[in-house]
Image (tube, rainbow, N blue to C red; front, side, top):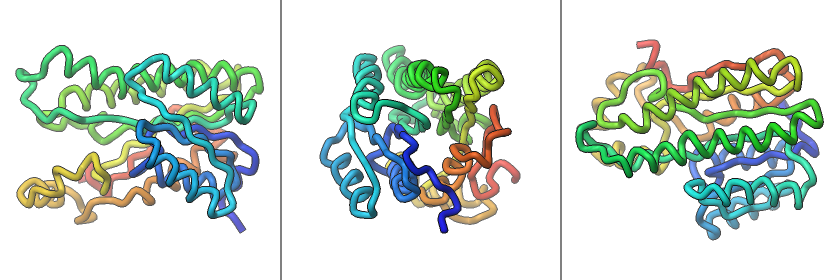
Length: 254
């Protein structure tokens, strides 16, 4: 018996070709959803969709560069063309390409992170909500970060966008709850074993320092974020909106 059942629900997962996004896409597929996986690399997208189908699920991929507004609109259009609807949006894609002192961050660097981590999720929320409003039901899940709650040195653009993403989540939640039955929630992962943290994990000094601050004593795994996403998307969370669920091994508690 499935703990969560999303039979025939249409789910869009950005950044779904690897890491947390891939794990979420596979979980929704296994739970019966029709999953649209979006990312930049077609070869990785094909692998995810093949894995979804191998487990009896229904998957479809759309090549999407969130740095391009036209790709964002195309993602929604392709989803409607394929499945004629959109029930659940997971804004998972994010970048943290610059680990620099704040005084070294250029305008171009700042704008690149803002586009992918904040503007793209807003545009997708807005376009998805237009569909969800018509059906009077929807679930939006934004993948934020502990970096949106606490300060991470040399990651000013990343922290700024993730903090703003949390505030955006709350504003949309209160605007869309009663009138449209759309919930909007966020997940704030800590340090998870993904490509985004590969550089940190590769450095013995940085890795040791991070683990000393974490009561769990380890990096999390992508699969450990999945249940939070499934919960927020489910009927069990129908009275939960504007929430931020931290999945960090106790890092913020310490």
